[in-house]
Image (cartoon, rainbow over all chains, first blue to last red; front, side, top):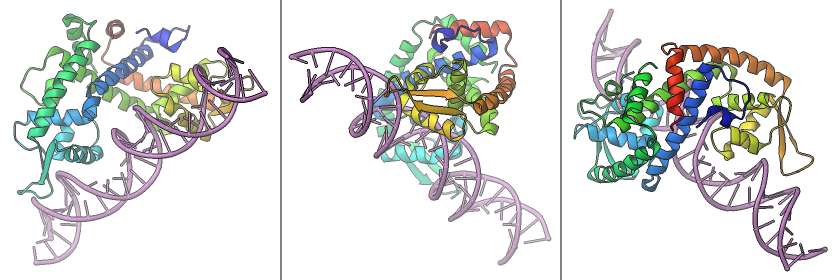
Length: 148
Length: 148
DNA sequence: CTACAACAATTGTATATACAAATGTATATT
DNA sequence: AATATACATTTGTATATACAATTGTTGTAG
């Protein structure tokens, strides 16, 4: 993926701008591929993310605030995001008995099952996205990403 | 920005997943910073992008299809995106006389002026986002991004 | 114990995005 | 010329996201 080709410009783009534009372009291909992998399951990347976080809790419930901390996007979504997962039966939500301001969210058996299937699909997508990168390339990327 | 810290997990994450998660995390910080820089001007990143493309046309009009090709996201937005810019007076749209299916979109004087201001603000944001990266780091990133 | 601040989640509203269907125009086929 | 096909954009609809305001609950100071 060459930036100048895509932007169809002859002018040289300053290194910083070029890097960020390139970043955003790659982001699109990445998120498109990942979303496509989840499409058969009818969940968004964010919803998948929440399911994974809940699985990582190993039965312990998570509050909305906890989810939000671990996720990337904003709070206001989280309520409605969980609503969607609830409708699909992948999570379970109840008021926390010790602090009624909080809610306890858990992944259901059904959620765990479907998540396992999604994992397979996601792994395939990841392999495809990263097929041209060596392990060393990825290590390098991670090192560079740490500088952001 | 360390991935394991953010995800609060003890388990080692496979290299590929780790790389992609890290990528998405960086994407959030990047887009947040860039959007924030544009906020005072009341335009989204996409709108800014369109204005830049139009400036790059040097007076030549662009059709929606052209914009769409140069942009990253999807067509359906583009009509409405241009609507917004039109409302703000930053662009001008008329039916193409030689092919009435097409539209000719141009950036206005006002658009050019405001774009110049935005550029300053964006450059500052870029500097901030990339403050920990050397030129060599960025070159490396660009090389790696070419593999996607 | 009352009033007030802080907390956790939800709701409202506006805007953005994705995908499919529809509109209007041009080109090609017969 | 009439019809079908392809093209370029627009519109409809559902969903996603951002930000502010609101609700209900808990903790605390007087």
